[in-house]
Length: 581
Image 1: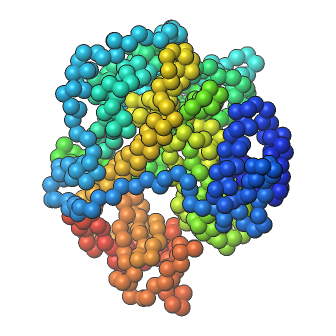
Image 2: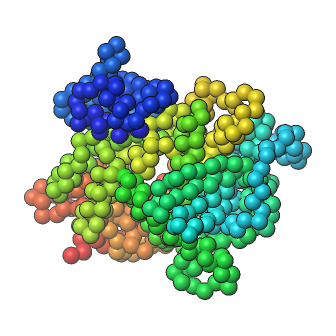
Image 3: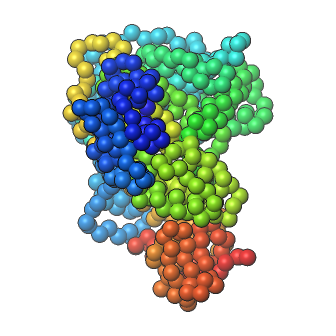
């Protein structure tokens, strides 16, 4: 049960009792009943309903409950630095400037290096492990990836049921709690991926070697085995420490080729990949039908030379091989979330329902094209709305507005579900080499499996960790985005004076953003540089002149000229904007 599902039920009832809610959501245990009370208290604090603890009555006031909702209770994390940072003519300075701007850690301290040299993990006894070294297990990653933290296996019974194995590097074994290694990993909170360089959460001796699930090497892992019926419903799951020996280090490109029919000498490998593709399609279809919101935006890529100069910028669609691994990781993360909920304290990846102000704008937009979105945000309804835009002129506008309406996903101890994925329970389990959240989850799971000593964290400690890693995640995203932006600006310097074709990618109150069709790089043309006085409509994300003979909207095909590229400030200015009929 999430805030979303509870709100939807209550919005229909308007007034009900606690016992009715228990019956509706099959709450039979003290723990499940306590969760209902926790959610009701939170919704009462947000002024979405009235919860009388003495009479056990719940009342939803008339009108739009979403309008009464206060801002998302979880903190909205962002980074602020009052210093002004300017880029130089030397592209090798870009990363240095960004690391300084965002205070990103550099080298590991000698104390941490010494712990790695001394193999600090050998001071702690290992957990019992299931021996999976003879099992057929493979990794599937990008060609340049060095920190391979997940591997997969699959089997299918004669009755059509599936067993998916997701095997994750057991980083918790190599990073004992409260060591200098652990304290530094917590401080960093995640790895930073800067196009062709990585600032890792863990020293490379662990991230690229000891923990990385390299082929034909024995590796300590945490394995989740999930059994699905033929329709993709979870029948059971189990979690166990394990030891594996990956048979192949596969790339997304090679797996994509096999999926599309390319020949493969190892028939066992080919058979397993095709089975994985079958299960992926079943799980993906089920998730989208259950309310998962899917934005299929193209990914932008940059290739740099040895001097940091961008030599190629291009866009690519997500391959099925990438989506396959994503779907399997989602299934494992769901199972981890459910396991934590059944056993006690947990650290969850949560995504609240859209904030009221943003959702209202999306409702207004949808109404103008004849679609009535639900009063209370519902992920299933939102996915249907996005699907209804397919092929329409305003498709891009609607998708961007829907994306902007979303709340921020964060980490917290109180589970409120994940709106965007349509999941009631979700934790991060599958990337402990590059995310501290996953390392915390592994430690909690191990404690619940073996109940050795006291719990690894107190409730207050989990709250503190959740806030810190949520904040650091935002910093990583902004820093990675800034590097991509300055490299894009450098690439466009040689395009000054050229006319490009593309589309309007965004409309703001000061101008329009124009996306080059080939590279996906954005330039901007201000309204003050246009021959006509332009009026910005925030609800429809359009701009128009006084008599509406000129209207600019997102997704519109245009031509424009790159008039100035300012490397120091990372700006690309355009003019001569022309709509392509």
